[in-house]
Amino acid sequence: MDTAITATATLRSWDETPTPDADAPLPRLATAEVAFAYEGDLTGTSTCHYVLRYGADGSGDAVGYETITGTCQGEDATLTVTHSCRFDADGVVDEVAAVDGTGPLSEVRGTGSFQVGHGGTGWPWSVGLS
Image 1: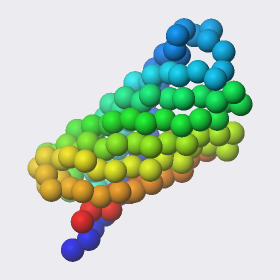
Image 2: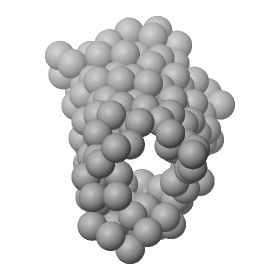
Image 3: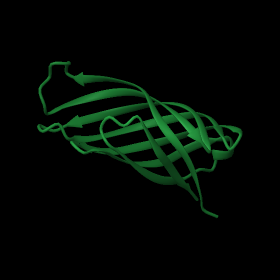
Image 4: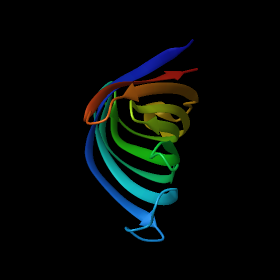
């Protein structure tokens, strides 16, 4: 039976380090450590580690791993997902794949996506489970 886990993700912090340094011109690479909070079927906090590639116009893409720790439908759980993002002047599109979990999410395998405009700090989030 297929089900989905839904939550609202809220950005808590974003710590980005450009490579090779903060004054590096575009195009360039960067890493970011990002913290989120989740409320819904999945409630908890997470840390995500991204590697970003900025093009000459500021658009680009990013890949990352995120582990969410908290509860899923009332039970202790963790969920690790991969992110594959594209960003431009309009915002971010993120494709997410669940790769590992514990508790009620121990058998999780699924995908999802979300879109958010620049300046957005909270957005609905859903991962389909099979």
